[in-house]
Length: 416
Image (cartoon, rainbow, N blue to C red; front, side, top):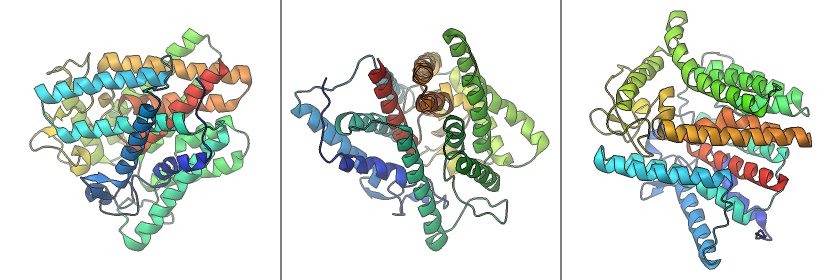
């Protein structure tokens, strides 16, 4: 299939740039609740309860639909691509989620939110597929990093001058600021790209100190797991053994290690004791939910909620979700076990197997081509892609998923 080429392709990148450069989270945490601050397209509702970013993605989806109609319903998707399989899995679990809402617990906000998250992934992927012709290289990833950092700096300036910084400040001489660059991405960049290593190392040190300043333990845990994955991907193993090692590493580092830390950390420090208690209670509640109504083997579906059978005294709107219903019906699941909740064991394992295979294909190409950009993409999968795709929930992550999934499919397809 010959790709459609447009003259002013930069114009088609503008919505993608807007999604990346504007912050989804703010130093003023209260802005997440009312979404009335217009310093970000994610935090500004304008019509029908939707924010600026939502209307942008709806408009993009509408243009894609028009494009498909005018091209006689040709969707232009390689049925062997990872995107096609992922989209098919999401469709199945949206249907299961609708059934869950009809038969177990109706929660329209939860269902619509998960639909919106999937819409971002699919729309961004298709948008790049139809309208953008770029020979994707490592420099483009760094452009995305820089755009994201500009958005964080903009949020810092805005809140400093017009709002209230509601994040912790544990190190008095450091400014409290959200991560300029994701620490995991910086570590992978340091490992894969020799150029600018000194600058990347300085940024890594700053982000580590900044994480301590915000008392962000999860961020630091993510850095540790990234280091393990970097080591795992350097092992010289057969394809099957490498697959097994990555699979075991992912399940241990994503599920079991955090649960172990929840038990050990209170004996070492009382930092974030409230957050730990919330996660413990959510974990116990999820275990109860696993054996009730829809089987955890199949999964509860996208848009499903859970029944809180264990309640933490520290629960608040950030741990229950803005749109939680009255009583014990909750939307937010702050526990590693939530990874398997919506897609179940079957859907989650299919997704894990698929994405590890994509990762290993990229790793194999990196060795054959002696190109570390492929290795960079490969390591991103267990660090970021797999968990975010099995348990989607953050809009900007969905944008990045669409971008990385598209680049991966393009690179693998072109290599063949």
